[in-house]
Length: 159
Image (tube, rainbow, N blue to C red; front, side, top):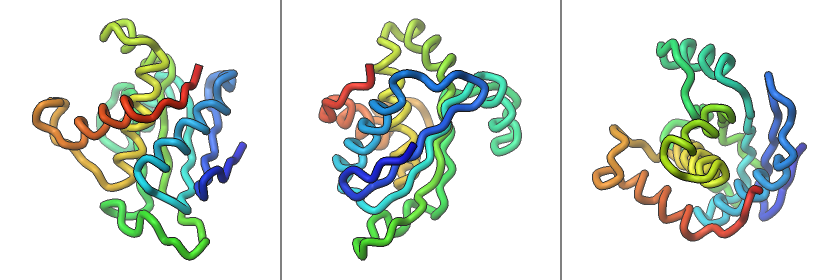
């Protein structure tokens, strides 16, 4: 399924799990985050998957043989040419989200599953836009502070 709301296209698919009922809402949320970042004419693909598939991807691309919550694969280094503006869409990259891990993390960190899903969606989009972080220290990492500010600003809901 694809959407080009606000001059962005967001495609969402599922692998190793049933497509969640909230897929359309996640698409709208991702589009709202892109608008908040003033990014236009992006094509983003999002894959929703499970621990096993995420472990395989993490092992292949990061040499870490365990599942993780989110992976981003940018098609341009450092978010170069985030906005083209000429009406042509640019494939920004792919985001892979581990749905079962996000549900577990939400319990562990006393957050709702929706809040954690929103956080991982923002996190993945920021990586595609060229943002990086060296640690998970919110006090020290500008990307993580921006992530939390976007969570507070973008009101679109997923469930």
